[in-house]
Structure formats: C-alpha cells, structure tokens
Image (cartoon, rainbow, N blue to C red; front, side, top):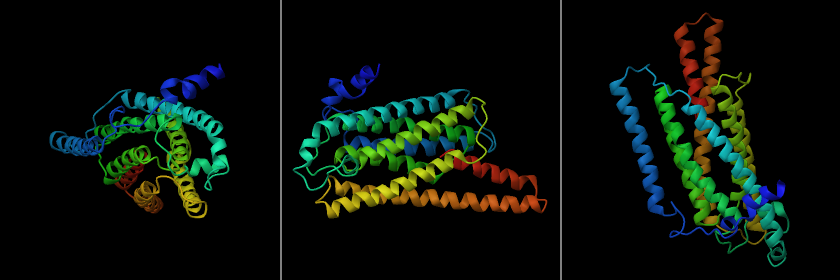
Length: 301
C-alpha cells in the first residue's frame, strides 16, 4: 500500500519528468496571471455591487451544501499536495544529496528545504507539486464569492490576500524560488486542517470553544516569518540561494499580508473588548449584532 502511494505521488513519470514551461504548463504565462487576478477582482466587485442594488442589505443568498463541499474539496486536495510534496522532497533529497558536497550552501536536508542551490531549474518532483499548489489557489478564489453571497460582504483584505497568494505561488515556479517546499508544506497543512474544520462546522457538528481558524493562521504566519529569517541567513552566510530576487518580492507581499492580517486581528480584539464593555453595562442588541458580524467577517478570510 505504501509503495503504491509513493509511486503515484512521487515516482510516477508525469511527476518525475515535470517541467515548468510556458508551452507545456497551463497558466504559466504572466499575461494569464495578471488577467486572472483582474477577472477575479472585477467579478467579485461587480457581484457585490449588483447584489447591493438588487437585494436588501441584510438579505443573504442561500447556497445549500455548496460551501461545505468546497471546504471538503480544498481540505482533501491540500492533504494530497502535502503528502505528495513530503514524499517528493524525500525522494529529491535522496537523489541529489551527493551533489551537496560540491556546494557551499546546503549540507543538511533542513537547509535544502530553506535554500535551493544556485542554478536550480523548475523541473522534477517538488515543482510538480508546486504547480499543483498554484492551480489549487484558483479553487480558493471561489470562497470570496461564497462570502459575498452568504454574508453580503467584500473586504479589501480578502481581495488582496487571495491575489497576493496567487501571485506568490506563480513566482515560486517562475524563478525556482528557495523556501517554497517548506512554504507549501506549511500552507497545505494549514488548509487541510482549517478547511476540514470549516466542513466539520458547516455540516452542523460542534465548533471549538476558541477561535480555531484564527489561531491556526497566527501560528502559520509566525512559522512563515521565522523561516524567512532562516533563508536570509543561509543566503548571506552560505554562498547564496536560488531565486532570491523573487524571494525578496515575495517577502514584501508577505509583509503586506501580515500587516493586513494584524490590522484585522487588532480590530477584532478591539471590537470584542467593546462588545464585552457594552454587555457589562447593559448594551443594546444592535451592538452585539455588530460584533457578531465582525467575527464572521474575520472567520471568512
């Protein structure tokens, strides 16, 4: 059983012989990336504007089991990408470890996770799963439209976050960027757990007694930030890592995402504090509803 899983997820010829190419890989051009982001932003804002004109502000559009099925699909796909990336990384380490002695950059598997040797090309097992991760980002975009239809909300954070993550996953492939293997493992682990939890609650099962999704996102961003310092350390002290130009741009995008997330987190904390003060002093139900709407807004991201 395990041998069959290893074959289909790391040794299949389509995986071993994968090559990121504008002529062979769907969605591999810059024009496709920018046009996709533009269509996504325009479609989301147009849908939100049309609903605001046609339906009352508090009227929500029922979607039935579609969001729950979407969460289940993302959770399962992310789990497959996580396992495939892990097995493929182990196979790549096994097959290329002999070459590490000729480089000054990496001497251990953990360093390889953080820093690709200079001259690394976007081909082989791990880049196949990086490509699968890039394609899976398009599936995440549908959650924006579910949020618009069910909660009648569209935030700048949601649009920018989804667009930035799509752009980052493209840059990983285009420039063979270092750190992407570890980033994919962290992200897919997060998505498999968070979207599995969202499916769990969507079908009516009990939710956690603490903000589960938010705490998972905080842990992920913290690990991501620590790993970025590790890449920088290896680049300057070990002779250079591949794709550092794209890594620098990605770091800026990560910084923007982190700032937007912290802004949301602080607003959430202040709203909760305000709601607690109101409840202690006998506040109105409208204040409680306002807090509840802000809570659901953050959970939808």
